[in-house]
Length: 517
Image (cartoon, rainbow, N blue to C red):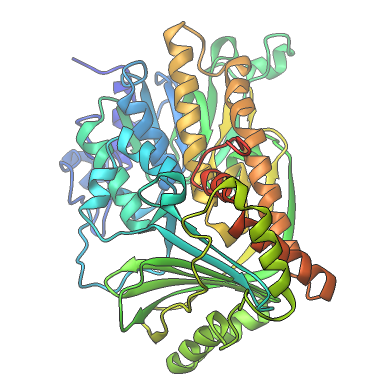
């Protein structure tokens, strides 16, 4: 039986981008014009005969622009929901990783591009069938975290048992997360889908029916203004009831849909790399320095990931350092021999008073834990990468027939590793809203439906962004009074159990602050 998107088949095969078995395997062109994962195209293409591209093809229900982690998570969520698993979906992305099954060896050096996924994200991955694939690859759960600053005046240690959790998070290489989502999608998808390995060139979003006939004449392929027209770099033209922009911070979808945003550069760059230890690391460490925070995150097998924010010129200099020199610089930044000593010095009396004051809340299992020095780096094991840091938030996540998810809607400072988790939260929420719309027969592109997604996600994301931005600003200033205030905040988080529980709970993916619960 011919599928409802079957009329796209000719176009897609001509581009070498679509499996004839919808919903089962991705297919992508490799060198030589053949795919390693799908049938050969008709011999006509080898003889130079071009397939006819037509603008009369039936539209897709949803076009996802961007097949990265968030875009694929959204596709997986659609495929696993009984209300949405029969939708027709186009995925537009020219990333070669979408075309091939990839295997990883534990003997390989971990890639420096990693994500710290929260318990909420882990739960989402379980729901969409992707976490079982993560577990087959390298990953590192951690149940402890220590945060401190350069003054030596304060620190706090978080423990998963403080909130009755098994872990605070899990560090996973981005390529493993992406592979796991692809594997889940291909193994369980009932969606009728097509992959277009191309870039979005232009997008025409239909106006309401009250617009002039001149504009409507441009949308003859989209009767009643029900479809978005998408022109691709490979010459294909698609139509979709809903376009989901999952195409990153420089989103073409956001720009073409005229969705405005607020952006600000942090005048910082982050250098990332994989480092090696003599012992396995089981804790997430973060120290705030005047130039920016540095994090040391476990990735398993005696490896850790370093994310170090600093001024751009410093990042360039550190990237070009000799490996031994960079390892020494990281060790100095993480522990220069002057770790916090809360029982003595200027804050000794303060700590005793706050400990006495908070004792009526009951003991915290980690309140008495002393400051610990992180494991020393013995070698830099991977290439170093540098990328600029900025803040961006779209004023609106949706407009008629268009929705933004992930970095297309918001980008944050990496100091708490929350960016990708916010994106996965978007993907989950949008998929649920669409399923609710399908269940009552609502048009997928209706603005009233999409606004429900925006209402659910925008306020929570804005709160998280404000918190992270505030942290970045507060720790960027080295001044006596502010140093004491930061120390007070650290000790409050360390010695007030209800506050600590709420911080951990919120960072784990809960969007509410049930204060002192």
